[in-house]
Amino acid sequence: MAVAVQLACEVTFSRWLCKSVVVIIGGLYTGFRIWQLWEGLHLVAYPMLWVGLLGLVLLFWVANLIMLMVMAIPSILPESEENSVEAG
Image (cartoon, rainbow, N blue to C red; front, side):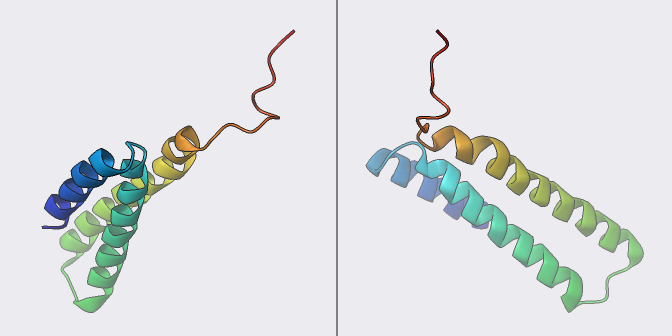
């Protein structure tokens, strides 16, 4: 359900605003998924196999958020004067 809402938001807002809003929406929904998994891990006592699988899924979403912060968000930010100095 959350993925369907995310995709609908990305399509709608990228047409209405700008394409870079997809990165921000992805970051928000990724944070939401991390929160859901974290809360879910502490809500119920799961068998160890399920805890391991949910832990792997949690690591995937954390890695996704790190990728967004390191690669995607800087790519949509305007370049500063210091970074855009042309070589002589």
